[in-house]
Image 1 (tube, rainbow, N blue to C red):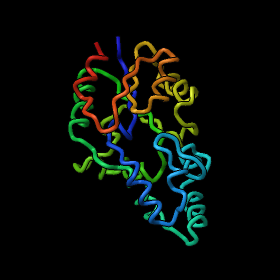
Image 2 (tube, rainbow, N blue to C red; image 1 turned 45 degrees about the vertical axis):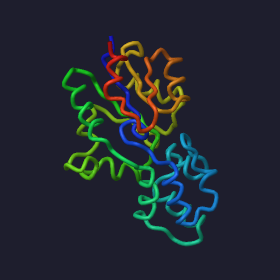
Image 3 (cartoon, rainbow, N blue to C red; image 1 turned 90 degrees about the horizontal axis):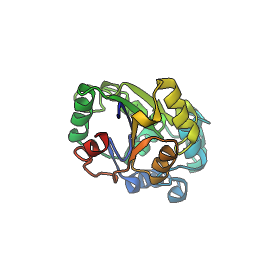
Length: 206
């Protein structure tokens, strides 16, 4: 029986627009933005930021060196938020419903301090609530210092939460991430980025 649901952020809770994110970094002056900003796993300083190898300040300084001028925290945040296409209200409503039904909801996301500066603020849902209003626990790659599909990321969360793989469903739009979770005995659901998964998820909870 499923008791816990692990959710990805980008591509599941919010719709991602990879082209818009790349476009903002290119406009800032990152010439090879397409190469460094993979749809699922970032490389270079972008990957280092999401893996927690460098801080937000170190990223800001390195990005400035890359584009040939100093950039601000706000400019970095603006570029990262280019990935944020939409936050469908239906997704937030089903999160609230699932918690009412007794499921423990846990966020498991490859992300960075700039994106979470928005998500952990009252601006997140447009109604004065941060992402913590919708989840029982949150685990971000830059804080755990590893990226999905790392086996360590899933093991870390299972251990910290004291939950069993066979009682857990993982919802992520990344096939590689879902494959690793499945290898570990976690139930999985891989909706496409931007799709309405709010009814289909119940097929995986039966």
